[in-house]
Image (cartoon, rainbow over all chains, first blue to last red; front, side, top):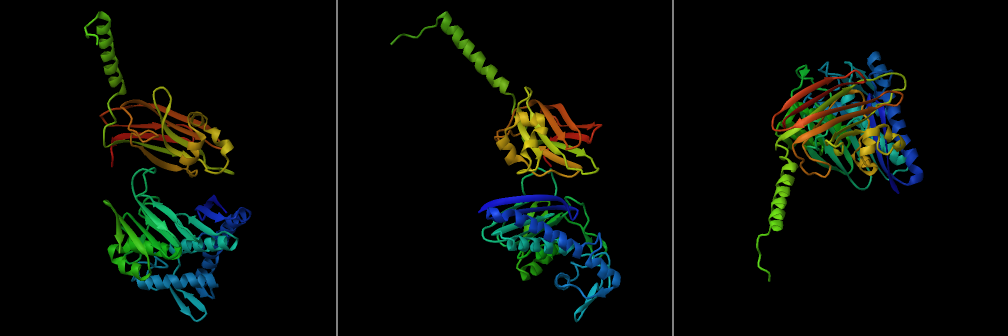
Length: 251
Length: 179
């Protein structure tokens, strides 16, 4: 057993970093399995190239694959739980999709960026474990997912200040996911679907039982602030809302 | 026991000792002003066929050219160590073992800011005085560039901006109170 790691740039317009605890003869295959899984799922969820998502949006609905269905169901669930602060089509607002038995009706240009990356990180971890790793940690552009025995320390960078600043917060990640939404890298880019304007805030970090949940709930926490406490507790997640004084735990 | 008395030799020794002590104390200089930091902001661009993000080292040298502190080291840790010497100045100053620990992944073109809090690699506060701020840049199939500028660290804040011609486009130094 040994520790192995790799990092690829330019995956989903960002980076993919994988760390493994694996037997040496399985390590390489497991690393590549994680990358292959992300590339495969890009063909399902991407908005920027031909994918199942773009086909669904263009056709106004259809019969989704099992994976697409799962993510759409989570999106609806989060939208309900957060009263629309999380939205599968934030630029559009209102009702975005409807399940009709096996089929799904798409009513707005879906944007699953707030959820799909977390889901892909989860699936990449699962792929690495299937390929023989004992424990795996995947960092897909800041969305972390981890499975397996042991734990990882996750340092969260502060929303402002120099790039070599020490972490503002250190979390212990056993099994689950960590995601952060903030203004550090892309500025105020998070759209509030209830108002249609960019949301005001610094940064929100969520530690949740899966990276998909962490990803979605981080956006919700950023938009809702302290009100998101109940939602986070309902999903078994722990959030941290960054103010100018520092991180505040929610709930 | 001999009675102590002043001889000429004894006197000179005492005076010399005192002068040496005062001189050494003065040579240490005043300590780094508390609450101040030097923010180094650098921007680089680049694109093209088979583009690989560059290796970048941002570090501080003392007046004699010794390494004081590494502020940023964009290398790929665990990968291609035999090319790390492309950052030739930093590679000669630093130690490989320390580079393995300090380095982070290479970054795409953009603007980055790192801060120096006045500590050296061992965490001791350095003295005021002259230092050289270096930004070293090396890219596969691309240029090698070195920005090296003397800064005078004292009580008063300063801001300097250097427009550069290469892929390393700009370096800004901002010495002042911590934000």
